[in-house]
Length: 266
Image (cartoon, rainbow, N blue to C red; front, top):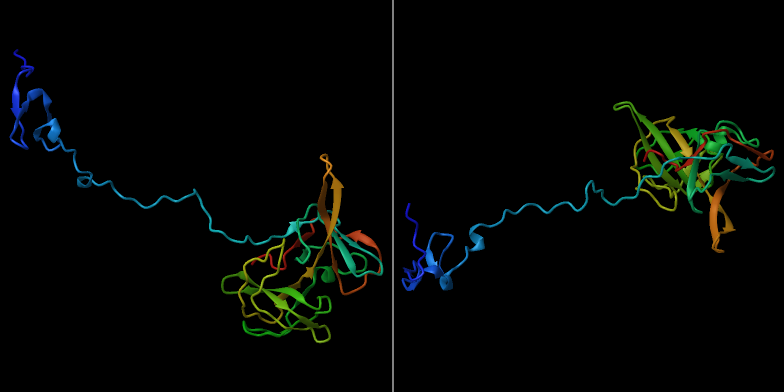
């Protein structure tokens, strides 16, 4: 079978200019045109644009910036210590990372300590009168255990969906004779671990809805000299003030006592 000539001395006519060029200097363009190398033009990129897709997400399973809601923490075994004749109560929790000015509520206290009842340590009572979401006066069945100012949490059961609705409320005055809290800010949030979480929503609450109080704490710092010779500060305790004076010096409260924010379901 015969083969094609090499074209060493052959000439060719350009499809673009019609001029004659050496055959071996000819090339074929993307559109099939037979042209000299000096006339060659690549295919225009805009004739075949690359598909455009949405910008990729920066991170896998990204989350928006937010302030995480605080949760109750398990305290040490028998974490509550009272001193006879002193209204200051000490709570033990190893490396708790709380700060002075936080508000703490005790949960699941198992026994009285130093003459203080479980109800006083946990500061639990109920609403005496119903309130709507705009009321700024709150009447409790008993406010004698609550501080003169601070934060409370009202827990109402919603029979329609079977859920508990909670609201954190700030107050500035407590009339223990009538159980009335005034100077109220509805739908508030109490500081915990040095941060204030997202505010709650003001709601309607029925008579006998559960009410829980909280106390402002003061951190007890300790220090030690580390291996490098520097001083490190840490805290395993914090204190708060109660309304009643303990009758004895005692350490107790039981096991699995929790210390946490006034509202654990915000």
